[in-house]
Amino acid sequence: MVAFINTFLSYLLVAVIVAALAGVAIFIGIRLRKNKNKQLESEQTAADA
Image 1 (cartoon, rainbow, N blue to C red):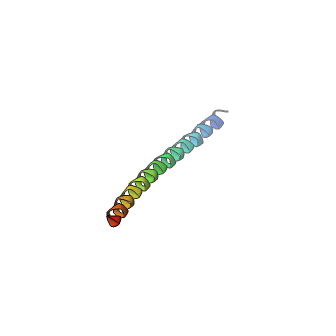
Image 2 (cartoon, rainbow, N blue to C red):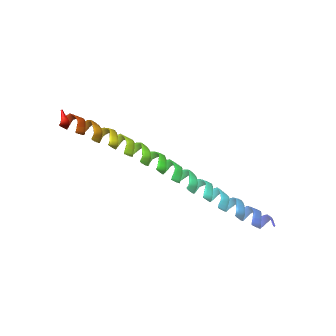
Image 3 (cartoon, rainbow, N blue to C red):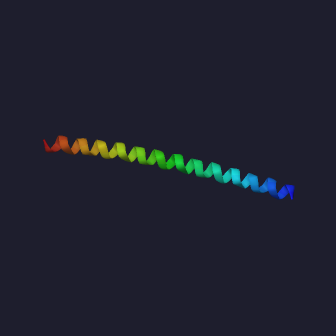
């Protein structure tokens, strides 16, 4: 029984780490895309003027 709990907690820890890395990757991706959209918008307004 102790081995089962130990294994379960080990896999739970791995799942939490994977979820945290995915969350950080999504956050970075959204931030980079927003910056790129802002840059493209400023270039387009400069080209229109």
